[in-house]
Length: 188
Image (tube, rainbow, N blue to C red; front, side):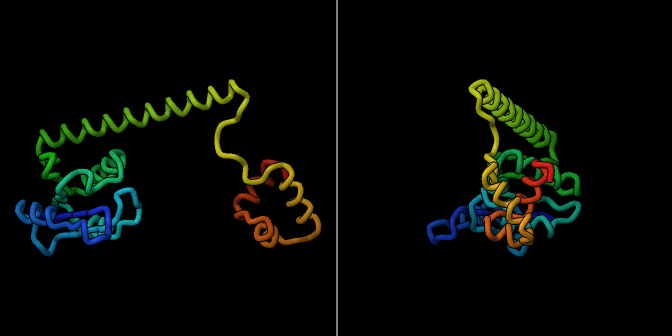
């Protein structure tokens, strides 16, 4: 069975799924098997995507108008399509003429996967080079500590006075996990 998914980036009336709907219906998707989201592709919480992924069964084919309507990024798209394949579900993108049920579509998908892996490797290389350059200049890379030495001493003093960890977290505006991490690094 062909199952369609559509997405537009905005909930405003200016963006509609009409173009995508028409293309999916012309490709043979039944009107009753269309799922949609009106949300940015960068968002994790897309209820329509979650619904369509839960609805799919082995032997079904997920059809989208264009690749960028499905995934947040190339790695995310590959993750979704790999999950579909593992579940016995096919994938078809109308604009790119990609169908994972054909050798041509499978090749295109693997090329996209290789490009995504290359992109991740380049990103990791740039991060490592940036951290090395920062270290050469005497700066530590990474996220700054939520509790500097002065605040950590104030936290220790409060705990020493018998305040509960929950009260200390509220007073200093820190999550409990941050408190435990800071105390663990300090050897407490």
